[in-house]
Image 1 (cartoon, rainbow, N blue to C red):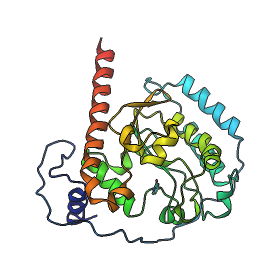
Image 2 (image 1 turned 45 degrees about the vertical axis):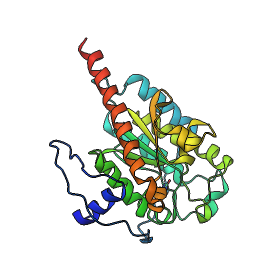
Image 3 (image 1 turned 90 degrees about the horizontal axis):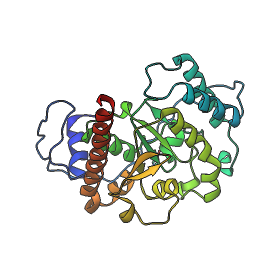
Length: 276
Ligand code: URA
């Protein structure tokens, strides 16, 4: 993405200045606004061919054993080969899933993307049309905005891990149904256990309500530090909503600043615990 487009995204989020990772640099305000999303459809390769797939139970129990033997922050870690195999098995298991009716309408499953040892994990709702075609979460206009939102807090897309609650696209992008969320829950749970992120961002109301098992409105869920399996979870606006609602864009920036402040506090605490 070129700088002009990047500035448009930042402007759309209401961000006047943005801090690259090492030295603060002030980026001048761009006097442009974001155009309406126009979906850009690209068809990429289909998922890999069949292999033998272990049962869910097997994958879960392997993860538990690996996590027990090699806690995230211990000096030793499982061989990357063993870990790669666990990820491959899980992804393959997802690709064959027929636990709900979404398997009938999907082009392919959308597993997740990014750094498997990420400190930050982002969880969205479900793949849309672009994601269903490309097999990767958040690749449409909303995804581009999400990438820019991450850049605004000095995170590169490839540094974090991005997944959705649902691995298959609901037809016409309708809201996920309870039974679909339930059928897919175990996959997300295993991704979280494997990554052991330090912080989770729930992207949008639907993801937040389902992950936190609440009906509270987004306004109540934002700006609060929640916990998911003992991991701090922060709720942020969904970029698709931000693309539609000019007035809400500045709130996206405050969500991110809040998430960053929670993360930095945790890092400070961890540092104190390590040196004392
Ligand atoms: N919206 C989501 O919640 N996830 C995606 O992957 C794309 C759009």
